[in-house]
Amino acid sequence: MQQFKQYSKELTKLKNELDDAKLPKHGKLSDPEPDFCFEGNKKQYKLNHKVLDKIDRANKSDDESRFDLLE
Image 1 (tube, rainbow, N blue to C red):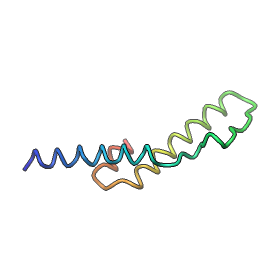
Image 2: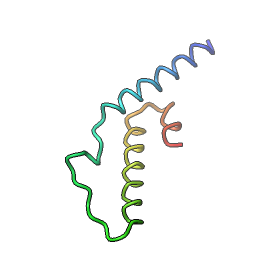
Image 3: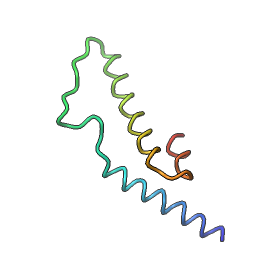
Image 4: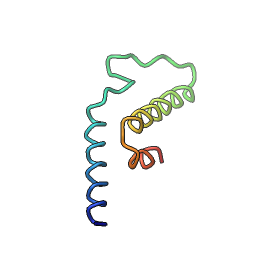
């Protein structure tokens, strides 16, 4: 039974990875990146997009893998 739970968790994780590959990204290639006066602003902008993508993936996942995605 323990092995079944482990396999189930692994399958769920793989499914989420496949779904993530299909998700539209917020920073699409067609969307031009804004011009920044400072390099720090550009780094923060990119970091915020990565965090937003991870939150979106976590929202679309099941409860078991949500914690792992948000960690």
